[in-house]
Image 1 (tube, helix red, strand yellow):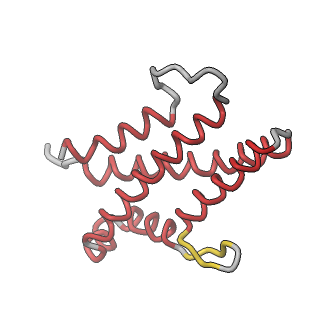
Image 2 (cartoon, one colour; image 1 turned 90 degrees about the vertical axis):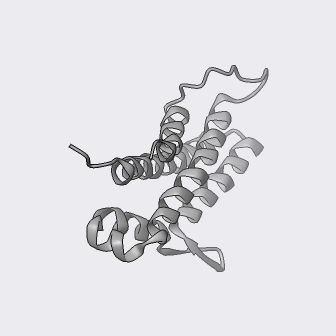
Length: 140
């Protein structure tokens, strides 16, 4: 079980900005933090979705709120002419807005990226919370 907690703890560590490694000279701290969140999001979303997928009937019955959150992440959303799961859409929005921000660091692009990054971080925090809840043994 302890191995299952590594991903959520790593996610929390990076999302909160508690990294020790200094930024490269000339690196934009905002872009670096966004990219760290993107890395954490991939791992965290994959973890909770695969956990739920491993036994959907069990989670639907025994942890319905966790299962509903995973279903929320899976809900199909429009992205251009394609349909992707909400978790993917959140990540794609951040990627698109990060590219726009890097191309022209205007306040409009900065605000849009900040908003998308906030949504991503909230989804990461919820995923991390759920992974902690459903992987913690319930021994007395």
